Image (cartoon, rainbow, N blue to C red):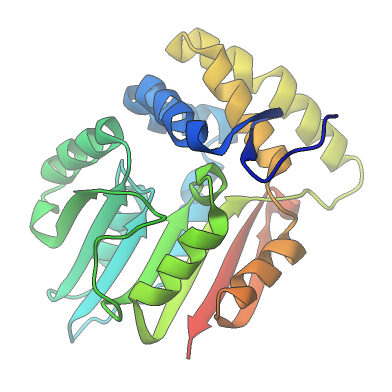
Length: 253
């Protein structure tokens, strides 16, 4: 493998110029937006719904007072809907995504669920959030941070926009730590998921990238260190389903 320069990053297993990654990621999600949630069901056997339920409950929005949550890379609304339903009348969730197609799907779904009055949809970059400091009680990002070109910048922005006492929560694919299961999972990921993507969406390459991006994402112990380096206290992670995914947490204290 060739040595990556400081101006390069990875896109799946390929090395590309850092400035090219965001556009390439946008192309992937433009391609899969309308079938994104269906593919999540097919790829995980519906488990993604369980993971998201567990994740969203950790936000614990107030049932009585005002509560502001920011869900980053949350275009289709899955996490935001759960937070909005879990909180009281004064709970407000801002859904932020860089991809307009994903946000369009989210707005449509919010209207169908009559939740659009509790949600705002903002198109912006996780590395440069268009919000004042100390604005949110919770920051969530599910299956999105591994697609950010500069993860450290996204973490720094998360810390900046959270209030003191606010919580950072990240749900992301991780490293299976169960013997034999790890080999089965890898064989399924690289063998079946791109094929399912081709059959359902007509796009095998995008799902091959998504699987490769999981492999390239830091191990949970390393990512916990990155969260702590961004200034968060009590950085931790919890593995689910044998390590297929992990919930990462940190507090702005």
